Image (cartoon, rainbow, N blue to C red; front, side):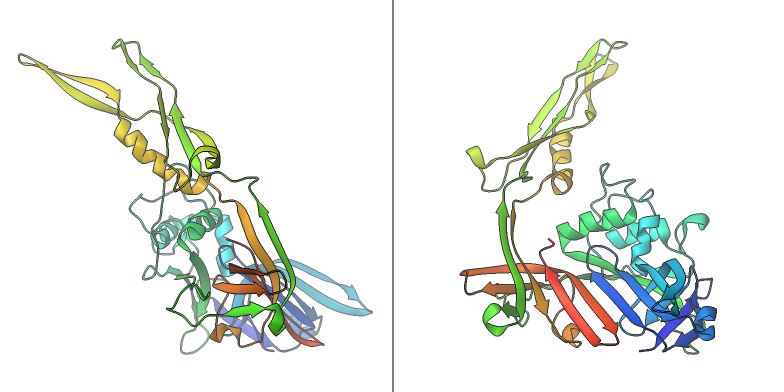
Length: 364
């Protein structure tokens, strides 16, 4: 296996290549960044390449920043242990501080970290955010000022959308740039007909460590939005308190599980005319308050836990059929349970014993 090493500067320059590696463990995720651990023999060549703040890449598979480095002795041999995150995992270092509610998710990321759009000290150098494929940004007061990775996770889970990054190689393979891009997860379960279904079943020995769990603990399916009254002593006008409830989908009675969210009252001005005198009277804008309640739904509601988990046995060419984030069908014939679950993690391990790839389901 060839590991490419880059210096992270204004050109993302290729520093060198090594094929001397003891092991590599890479865990891919869809709504969050990946993480990896790579162990290299401490040869003179590797010591010159593997260093803090460098980027490692397995071409056409994954790439990431080294954020932790240790040189130590293991089994009487010196080794370099490099840990880090995928390039998109570096979104944890940015806050969503700028942007408009009309911006898409990728546009918001560009405004807060893009080389061409963000303020100089906040920009990811030599980085392009591709906005061709994006989803609704969903920016609201409760999402503004969250870390960019947490923002992506919240919006991504609501929209089935993930953000990834890659090194775009120039023709001379020396001067390159980094591209952030988005993709929608695919539904490959038997519930749909657009894609070829992907099924993992105990009778095919393609799934192990099955588990099923259902719980209503933590479920919230209705929001009660409220505000305190707001007196205006100068004008001798009181803005009344507001209380409004969302209407849960197909839930009534004991099935409704509420969460209270406090907000500031929204004001509008009614025009009152008396002869030639025009007076603007502040009143509670109930329509705006009702609209605001919808903004709180995705970040304050939670479905019941109803999932089937399992470890999926997959081959190296799995990306030709599915990838992390996609929804597949799990079938445990012995239990009589069929569930359609999202692949939340795929872990690839390369070492002296060969290649081992497993996928885990369960993350919504």
